[in-house]
View 1 (cartoon, rainbow, N blue to C red):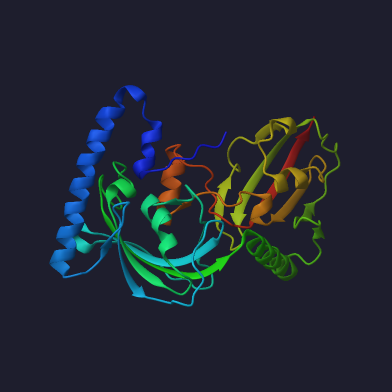
View 2: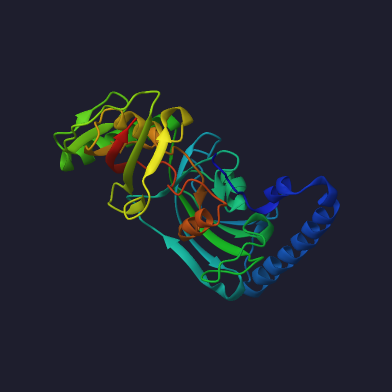
Length: 313
């Protein structure tokens, strides 16, 4: 079962009723501490910013009155920089215009929560500065490599593109097709966007749709970055009926025979879809390791599987 962990005010849903009053009291206290830290920072830097109901402060840097407003259901593409208010310490900057960070503008689709809530203030082509309090960010979560508990953040965010889900899907299909043409021109294609390349033939049984399989896999982004692998460890042993495999992986394996090696390439719609976006992105692996986030794959990411089918029962 997938487990999604959301920070900030949403952590209240994880708390039992018995301690809700104490939690609310602690949260109210933290809100005041956060707000004072942000106001002190703004005063020290002589910055004018608007406080929103969420507790997030915003300051437009570049406005585009004619741009399309961010709306629920949009696939939002952004560039950003992020730093700690305390000491102006830089955390992460992402400015790859060819591969912007993407997320679905829906409830609970992005960490920090405060940015998820308030990016709806923006239009395509605009750049805003967000001052995000800890209760709308990571609250008591800490990572010694990047920031401590109850940290407040400054984020410069530029909305570089907005797409509908259908437009994003079509763009991914096009990207996958070009990738396959450039790298695996002999791949077998399927109508839903899956491509299968047999790299070593098998000579055993064909998987049964209601049966069980055992296999090794390596999952990668299309740029070759390895996300996860079972090589050097235990293979996956699963019944198709358990529905543990993403659609593209299950469909691809059903085309294989025992002993076969194959490469499966698929758009995110056949893999992990919109998932949850995490900023800074370098926290994603840590949250997965802690069991607080699934999947490890970033939103709207086409993926490639290298599969060895060991057995079909």
